[in-house]
Length: 498
Image (cartoon, rainbow, N blue to C red; front, side):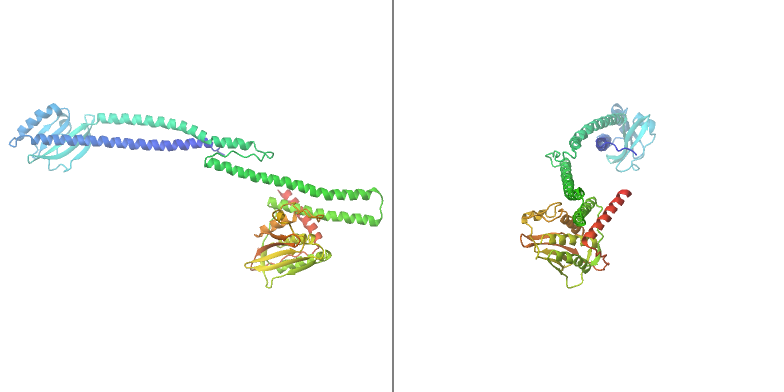
């Protein structure tokens, strides 16, 4: 695998490439502008020579013969243009003037009537000398003439060559300097990131309260620091939650284990009759059931945190949810000396839900209602239609919840303080119930007034087609224990297959 270049090097290369493209573009444009300026100067010089010839011819007497004109031009131009490229011919083909350089290269010249009206520029080589030339017709004293004049390009080409060499040297030097500058600029620009990385390397699970410095500038560096700080806050909360969860779970498990150990030690201290052993075993069974429910909830919450607990939603009649719950809790409510009512919707309602999950949610809410409602009270399981959703609620006439604790009732291991002793429990049920509701796209709400009872409610989306629900009519304690065994076995299988 090819290693990626460090970001500092990549920034330098991109910066150098951008500078190189810019400098070469400027260089090519500058060279083109110089060429154009020199061409314009040369063309103007050639046009000026043609106009000079025309003025000279116009200044001669009108009755002057071609031979006399030839002698006059030769006498005048041999001194100033003898070493230049110049030749003049009239409309009859008579040579008025020919400099030696032109005569050696161009033995003939087009007549005025054949010359292009606007003149023609061209380049040729005469005696190894590049020449820029102009052939143009002129009219003087009513007669037509053709003038060809030229300029040597030796100095021009030398100047352009010198300019190109200096331009290339300047671009190369500028590119080198810009690359070095770009490297140091990228290094300085990345210094804050290196500082953030150094600070982040010092953070571990023991000092998650440390936060990275945030620059005052509103740029990408400050955004990065803020993002990392928010991430550290989430990690800190997650670690705190894990520590709290572990501590509370250890505490909750230690209590029943200590009770079981005490009961066993007392039973083994001396021989007892059958009734005493039966009483001890009964108490041990109660603690075992309590531990089973606690471990089941702990395992479920651990699986939800790890994303292993899933919900398979399917269309189910709401009556198929209410009937098992009613049958399961009718006797339990009767033993607790509570009136238990189930209110069903008038129409046949189909909801989209996970049967096992919703059944567990209702069991948690009904169990809480039975524990916190004094004998003689009433618990109502109600279902109703709310537009395109179906609302389900569990209402009791129990001790209620102080408004100060309403925001915390769904926290793990939290139990609302009461004036008397707390009923047995771990404080995990409502947290698990909230998770189940959220997996159904619902929100578990609570309304309560101290001394007058509480109402927990949620709503499910209504559906069309129906899928038969899988009922489990076993007692709640047995069902919970077996469910725990299945969950524990599933977790072991998960571990073995990973």
